[in-house]
Structures are given as C-alpha cells and as structure tokens.
Image (cartoon, rainbow, N blue to C red):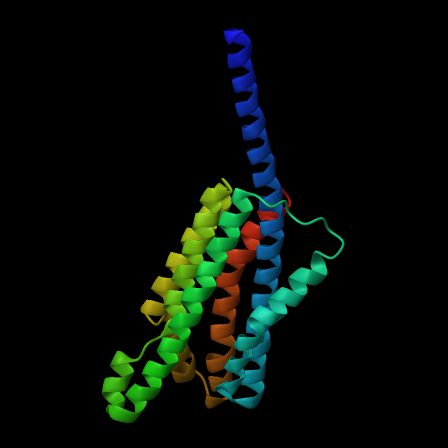
Length: 226
C-alpha cells in the first residue's frame, strides 16, 4: 500500500513537471513570436523616422515613437490571428508580469525625464542644462535588456539571456559614452554640410534598429522556431 502511494506521488510529480515544461515551451514560442514582431516593428519605425528626419531636417518626427506600442500591439494581434492562445500558467504569468513591469518603469521614467528637462531648460543656464539633462534612452535600453534576460531565465533560453545582456549593456555603454553623437560630429566635420541630415537622422536610426535586432528580433526568431 505504501509503495503504491509512493509510486502515485512520484507519478504525480512527473506529470506536474511535464505539464510545466510543456507550458514553458508553448509560452516560449508565443513569447518568441511577440519578441520577433516587436523587433521588426521597432526596426521599421526607427528607419522610417530616420528617413523622415533626413528628408525634412525636423527632429519632431521622433514623436512617432509614441505610436510604437500601438503598432506592435496591432501587428502582434494580426500575426497571431487564428492561433490558439498560450495556456494560462505560472510561466506565462511571470513573462507577462515582467513585461508589464518594464512598461510601467519605462513610462514613468520617460514622463519624469521630460518634465525634468523642461524645468531645467527654464531655470538653468544652457551649459548646466546640457550636463544635468536626463537622457532616457540609455536607461530604457538597459531595462529592456534586463527584461529580456529575466524572461530568458524563466523560459530556459540561453540565447535569449545572452541577447538581453549584449543588447542592454551594449546599448547602455553606447549611449553613456555618446558614441552616436561622436560619430555624428565626425561625419559633419569631415564631410560637407549636406550630410548633417544623415548624421542626425539615419545614424541614430541604424543604432536603434541594430539594438532592436540584437535584443528582440534575434531571440524571438530563435524561440519561435525552437
């Protein structure tokens, strides 16, 4: 009787483990597809904005990034139409909550950064403002890399973990050392003024597209095809 009870308990644990692993794989494929779509949308939006800034010399086109969540949601819903939804599970809930947390922190930081920069521009001298201004992009890239890395651990995807680390830390270092601005300055200095639009529009667009490819598209492609 005791042996049967032990066997039943062991079999129950095996069934639970199998269900968790199956759920992890299904959620992983669904998450991978979402990451892939998000990366493609981010890359296309970055290149579109870069081209518009190059053609018009108007940096107000950066405001189009506000529409990016709507574009990603619409594209993701369209791609997943007719597909069965990922099963409700602890794994899926953890992945969803991680991305929700990322969205809340990014939105709060962006709002704080915009308000702070507006106040600084009114009450401080220009040179002081340039030193103390908040640059949200570097922190957003780091948070995105952390979110992707955490989800990689949850879904047991080493590829996703490393893409998150490289994309997040690489983006933080790139923006912290003003590599984009340095390249822009070199391009303007060593070429004619005709290339100023390229420097201010296309170079940042290519950088954002590259980081989106490393941090979103690559791990998404790997996971959805796994």
